Length: 319
Ligand SMILES: [Zn+2]
Image (tube, rainbow, N blue to C red; front, side):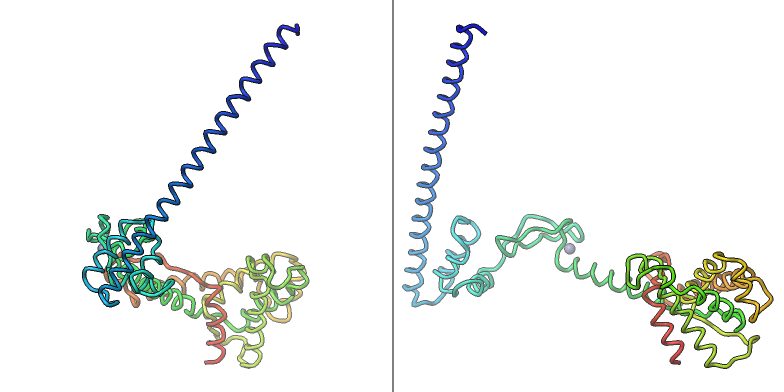
């Protein structure tokens, strides 16, 4: 690089820095002008508020129609004046209480936005009001909520009816299934109770369902060939867990079942699964018939098994 080039670079930097200095000065001036304008707005606002207080005094502190018109204009159209300052100056009181009193007195304005449900024009109730997305009037919103609640009640009734449909198997078969499940305690699988795995797989809760059924059968003292109904919501978990347990160790499975039955675990579980499917299918049809939704197409069944199964369980044991 020649000394000539160096001299040219130096000049270029000096000139760029010079431009920056000038631009910074212009920014400072602009900021000073903004501050000064803000001060003027504040002063003008104070003057307006002063006039408002004077009007209030002149009307013997009564908020008549004339004063209300002024307040209405200030609130909706002079947004540089704070709501609480207008409310206080007009005599509605301080803070939020004052604002609420003022809003109640001046009333809302029309927003120019139409409800997408019924076409009615939406009312703008305060400065901070924003239309919903999509815009809906209060009547349409409450009708929609009511419809949603009605529908959710209907679906949960159906789900409960389906989950509580009884799956009847011989006592011997239930004993075989619960014995298989109970042979593999959840603690031995290393699944911590209440952990994410536990919640996802239902390890502990399914094991406890097996234990409850096992104890109930013992207490009942029913004969092996008698039929015993288990709610579908519970039977579903037991059959699924039974299949898992039966698949782990075929030799141990045989040993566990030998004192109970000569039948293979798979045959027992497959029969229970088939009966479960049949019971559920019938219960779905019955629930749809019984809990009918007149105005809309039939909904798909909802299956909140995990929420309902324990409830149903206790109900069955207590009944
Ligand atoms: Zn509407």
